[in-house]
Image 1 (spheres, rainbow, N blue to C red):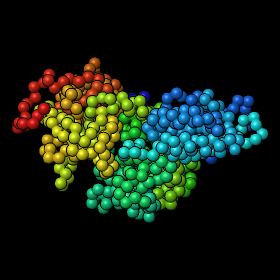
Image 2: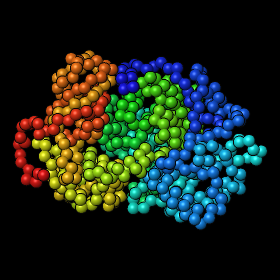
Image 3: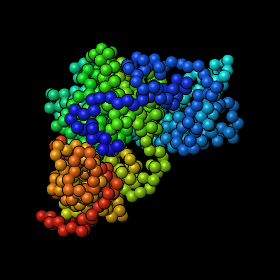
Image 4: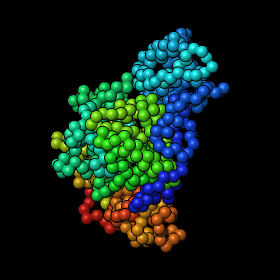
Length: 612
């Protein structure tokens, strides 16, 4: 699989489609179950006709997968006039499902535990939804009916099933936060799309919507993003959009939102590729959104960005923009081009074109459950065409990690990755980054490092902010900025970690990694220098040894020993690794560390009194 990803990085590769089968929604249930269709579909019109054609009901009723004990999805056949004891049990069950989904749960009404879609009469459905509403009120949550669907199940009377989203009202800033990295070629409309989503106003066709996202004057002048910026889009407990159209500040958005989507706007131009890679490896995005212009198709860095997301195993969905600039035939040609690339052996993805709100709901659920599903949206940031489908998708999109995994991370010792460093007047030194594990509180004592000499310094966390609003407690997986008061900024650099003093972190100059060479013009051998990205670490390293081989060529795999050339770093075994140098690119994972104590690097030119 990894070796085939190299096809995405080779110039001019992957232009021909494969004979993979296309996948569409099962017309029997419409609730996200997938069915394979015969391969060889010649165009989108025939594909659409085939997926939407309703066949006669079979002897077996449509079904969903059986209900899972864990997770945030609950099946209920009906909820009609429960006793007080039964009602309390149902409310406790809802609390459990909300906890599993980190504040979100999905109830399928009219469905048996084995997944059979039985359906309810209109009166029974109305009574069941009323009971569900009372249950949600009991646990401090709101409900939103996502969709209703008629079931053809050996009955003369119409019977319906309903899919309902339960979302907890936020308390103490502990809203659900998902990070989405925005990728795509230059001029594909990434920043404009984010401006429309977060500002709540359509673009004028000349880039007005993106102006608030740019950080530098040259970005405004050229219209090209060269740095990493962050934008937020909120949804309240009822599933309504919360953005800057109604809220003046980020603090107000955070106060009223139950769910936050943090967009990481990355650069599209090839000369800023190192910034894009840094954003992907450092900020730990949950998902990646690849933006493609309908009128140009797959050009420039589009294929390379797709390969990077796949190499780092970040689930990816695609948004085709600027559909207002071209004919329907041009849009369909771009979608077919994307489908061909996604079906290549190197990708092996199942494209899923979203044509309506029901498709968006099912796509969000399938996307989180099945890693090879890739939803494709077609929209316009100027006319607003199909923009609501993308908002529905973001509203329903569940987190990748469940509450049990979250709890396990929180039980570990504190580890915060330093990604950004600032000096704020009247506040002092401020660092931004992600809490990888543990819990961080105001006033907590941590150590930060490693320095050039491999040492760590003591410091105190004076205050914490998430999405520009105050926060007393930071939990594993959350991104935030920490104020460090009078701590000397000169002692900090990107790539450092702030950890609990009890951790005794392992730092190294040399490490071994099992790598796959994605693309290299010649041969990869001992003595070659590359820029290595491991999490928030970005540093030049020299290839010390290639085990078992003299040299590597494109697509080959080997265990390689690297040595950092500037200062030691804090790494972990199993961490994903990506390296580059010019057109040379490779991926892999760390297999072995050689602690810095085995080395005798030259001593620093100055001494620090507050070393730990």
